[in-house]
Image 1 (cartoon, rainbow, N blue to C red):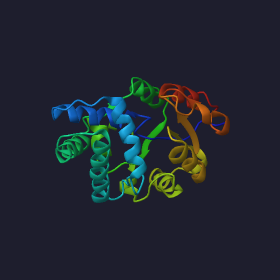
Image 2 (cartoon, rainbow, N blue to C red):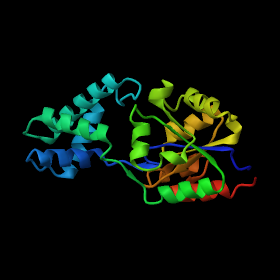
Image 3 (cartoon, one colour):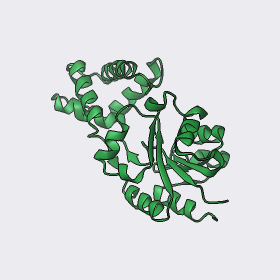
Length: 236
């Protein structure tokens, strides 16, 4: 296969490590003076998510997203037996989320971006994210690597809808067959890219895709650096 003209990268789970929900809720509860075991919170989070409607928040409507988050935090804390004020916890977590303080780069993110950039690859971010994406990329020190940053909030459509890929391709002037998308999710990144005619590569830092490897017709690698080397090894 020929090396792609443009490489799009997902944000969370691909470029950026985001903490598990039970970790951040446990910290917020501790700051309110109540310690809850993460195992207890993990079970509570699972039960709360099962009760949520819609089951997944949208990045297209900030008010709807905040309402979803408030409802989720209250449900999760109730399931965990939290005795404090859930409103205080919800506010703290929302403010922390909007500040970007939870986010960290993966250990090899810079290495992978340097590798791709040095080889002359054009790069962009394509992610289901709200209005904070560009700000967070700047805070994390990686915005300069990207020719474009496309969030679902900006494009008004979310992956796996192929229209968000088409939007990004129009923005950079590249045909779908000459682009690659690196992500970490089977539905949003793999199926979304396929539907748009973009070549997918999946990164699986946590090993969550091990069972899907036999049914997925695209490379699955364990790190972003591996994905970069794979792309650069393709014939020009």
